[in-house]
Amino acid sequence: AIALASLQASAALVTSRAALGGTETLTWGQLGADDGSGNPIATVPALVTTSTNASASVGSSAGELYRFDEGGLSFAGDFANGDQLLGTFGAGGSITIDFETLLSRIGAQVQALDEGPFTAILEVYDDAHVLLESQQIDGSFSLLNRGTALFLGVARAAVDIDYVVFRLSSNLDLFINDVSISRERGQTVPEPASLALVLLAAALATRRRQQR
Image (cartoon, rainbow, N blue to C red):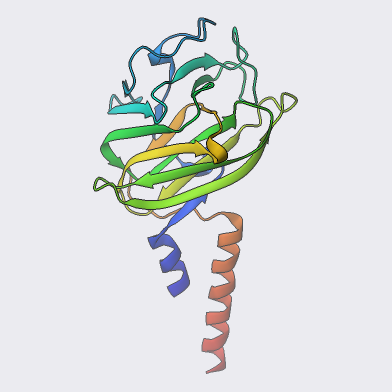
């Protein structure tokens, strides 16, 4: 019971959109269509709204962001065909999303611009600019793997996420698709390895009680 309570009080890496259990979505089509021009979004940071009309802003450490659609006029990657994408496209740097109200869960699929291995990193901060945690996942981009872009998310028991930063190792260019979020307080979602540790701890605790 102690081990389980400790896990639920912290946070968990989430690697699928279904497991995240988002209740709102932030999509990028509101920032303009993919017209194939390769021109950056006119204003960065840009104001956006979620599917429930909650406000947020999105910016980049490089000062530029670009809109493409998977399988559209000029983008072919590992996302599902038609996904609305936002990325850095040659500018490098990170993508920061700042929300008007606090979150408990957030995640999106991520991909490097260039083929090859990469490490995707998601940093979450509170409203005092304190880093709450950093989660990462290793992946590899190949044009042969359409529809397999990695999902990188964080689920916290507390509703304390004010803004997040998506970035790749070595300052590689990155793209993300729809962002799933939730503002609901609740238990974190342990990955299989973490869940196995919890179950092992619970079994050991039960065995000790039985031996007393």
